[in-house]
Length: 153
Image: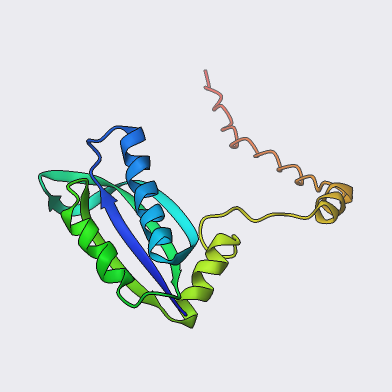
């Protein structure tokens, strides 16, 4: 059993329904060919490094799957993507144990931009701590006033 990941860029000119239908159709194609879908990630609209088909942006999708049955599954999926005008680019990668672990940690929120979750007990302990007030700042001393010279008459 090998885990693979296919990342593809969908043309952003399509409507939202067509974009989602494109990603869904490739997920269904993988299942039909005998793969087990582990995760589908819509990365959204991204800027391209260079123009592709006169486009400077694209909708990125990533599908992680397990290829257990057919050895020619990847070539069939890549052929379908090559023929599809909605797909601008694609890349299929075989994942090693480190890639699998990384993707799993990313899904669980251990890696990436996920906000740190604070447990309820930690929140309660934080609420019980006395709030430290800042020490009052010393007032600045006014500049010395020069003594007026008395004019002698």
